[in-house]
Length: 238
Image (cartoon, rainbow, N blue to C red):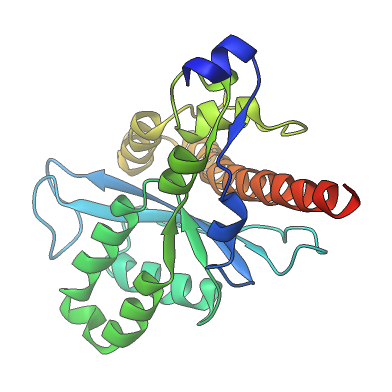
């Protein structure tokens, strides 16, 4: 980190290319949002149980293809929303290909808890297969990449500042800037006193926010892979 700041240049691990040999296309980029209800409105949940209410997934078929339009799931008070959550997610990520998630322990914990649900018992093998495919992009980035523009932070919102041509921004009054704001949007949307127009506004904000997170992971992985390709090309002409 000190060398990167002194030289004011990004640092890449020498063996970065070897890291990507362990991954297989198609690549999926996945993010969840959860809520801890003080007074549960969903049957089978308890106070502060991390209820998954949203996911976002982007798919990248191969290096010579553009990332596909993202898929998403968002529910507020459907009593079978956990079943809907996992069924739709399994369909979105199919059965093969590496799945990247930032700070993936969060997503894995959610998936493990879903395995305990009676409504999801028939999906245990499929959920296990999904979990086994997950790679933590936070660990990949922390071990193999750093830029002074990140200011010592490997969070998604800091990493995108270091990726050229990444136009994703979380700034602005209408944008959700983090997980806490996403939870607040869920609470507003489930409040009986919130009018229909406001609920629709919060829904659009949530969908936009979660999609940014997974698209940002695509830009990160693509950037790291592009660097390894560039290094290989230089060696072949040297």
